[in-house]
Length: 196
Image (cartoon, rainbow, N blue to C red; front, side, top):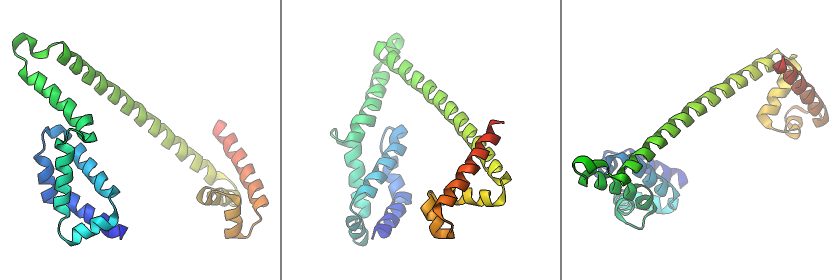
């Protein structure tokens, strides 16, 4: 049942009609957020209800109603969080004229948006650097594991795959205490080689 509901939602979200419905919502900057929010709501809906609506060919209409409620109902979380601030900013910006096009409120909003953009960019660069550093470290650890004695290497791989010594014992027939001692010794060797 869940799989049928998931397939129906996937088909709907990828359909031309759904994309056209989302494209009619202003401002355009929020269309991706709105599509994601609708998808999330549909995925959280009872799978039986989704299948029932899909079988009755009413899922599109249900999704369109969800879109309308999210985008235009002043009580919807999406409207309060995303749409209202963007619409207020645009309205204030468009109604300004001449020298006061960017009055204090708008100037503060623009500065805030610029600082957010810088912060997001800095965070993204930092995250990318951290991810690359982590990937390099993981690659180095795997190289060191491969350099171990074959038995130790295989035991560490099993531990990484299964997560505990009892599982290794169940799969290999080797007592879990022996597995523990081997993996502990191998980890000490790995740490020593990484510290060099």
